[in-house]
Image (cartoon, rainbow, N blue to C red):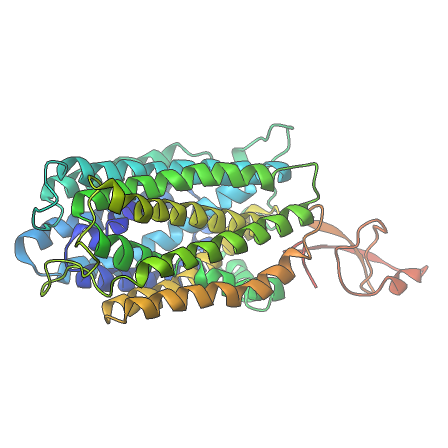
Length: 460
């Protein structure tokens, strides 16, 4: 629902300044609580943490009702850090559920199921402004989303938050094959242990290699929601676009899950194929976006009632003008779903340990939020639309080499623990995923073994 509101551009407002500054506050807080969110979830469990976190979304949406009446953005901006706190915890919890609960060959499916349910909220949220503003004609002056629209968002977000109380904790989950969710650290973790594990994340080379991909994974939202959807289309068409954007994500998430779970291919081949397809589609998307961006430089704001796009704001009732830009917006949604699904699937190949995955998911979202803070401020500071597009395009391609390196190291299975000898060698001669030390160390006849937990299938 939060995404649906933002996908309209300006969170339903004409002037995007308050929304941009609110989102900056959200993602600044998200950086911190994304990084520590996994520890909070491991210590407090998933149900009440998700419920409490979900209510922060409703608080943020309600703040725009106050803004509609006062034009004072202080309340909305103040809710940003509160929502960022809740979001960091919520996304850490959902990442753990999505990546740790399934069997290895089902992770693509679980990610897609989550992404479909997640974006169903966006589709419903897109219907709200479209239905409320449907009777406005193309020539109607652009107006903000009315109170009734925000009230619907608040009701749905509050109901969704309490639905989290129905979730099963990982200790009670039994998979299809009778196995249980892997929790290799102490089931009853503590603050000290979580602090140690958090510090280890920052020296894990495989996590560090994914920083560029994480940084750019939400960077493009500010451009797509504001300078594109918010600047080009009438309010009712922005609502329709939002609905179609998230619906496209649902379809794309299902499609890419078929590739990620295709057991006739090795996990490495699946990862390589998915990344190659993502690289192709993303560059095609930005190329098409460039062709549209060359036709305008601004959208409506407090000083301009119209966009300088030829013919003014685009309305869905004009098929000849609307078809191309609207289809491109749907394509943006599909590419985003592929990006996010691949990122989570790649992280999910590192381990099956629920507690580690909660930390990985939180760190991914925290780093993602660093990029989002920068992106929303680019728009808030009125950086040129063409410059924003170029930054997005370049950032994605700069992340490809590191992501490719990680993808080439994907192994057939993720292991949580194994017997390691006192001199550092491991016992299973059939497993080559542990990169060091050399196999020659296994020649010792007098080695003692000890069991250690490995945080990643990519451990060095």
